[in-house]
Length: 184
Image (tube, rainbow, N blue to C red; front, side):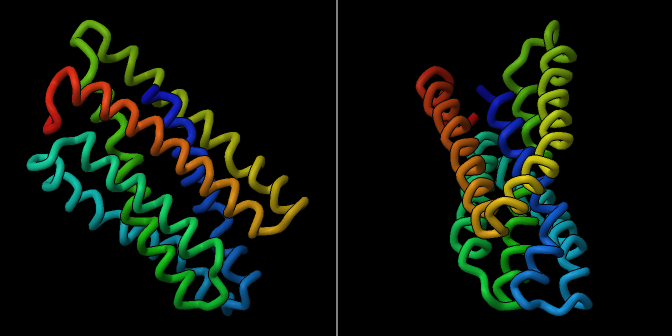
């Protein structure tokens, strides 16, 4: 279940990083400003990764990942989908950079915390394979959606994938919470 969530979330984040500049230009943002959006996403992600590690120590790794997944989903559906201004696109880059980079970095940690030492390498390898496959498939598939229906349809599809990823992660949280406790 975590591998599927990792696949879907990686599909979303790598597609966003690939097309955020073109989406911003499509929404009347100047090229000079739009070209900085990937750097803004990654800069926000740096702070997100640091803050998430502190949060993971107090509320749990899976719980902090859930918050990040839902922040990213909300940013896609509430900021990118209806965006019509430069400020909204910049806000989307910051929020999705915070949540997206946190989640991408936390999936291997979650796999490591759920696997025994004997199967640790193989489980992390499968998780990274799923993420890598999504990184290869996400941008071309999103490009095909954009060429057929535009950035609005692509944002809706990516938001849907991100929400489904959050649902898989939530299901895992509930199943593990019942077995192990809620702060693990």
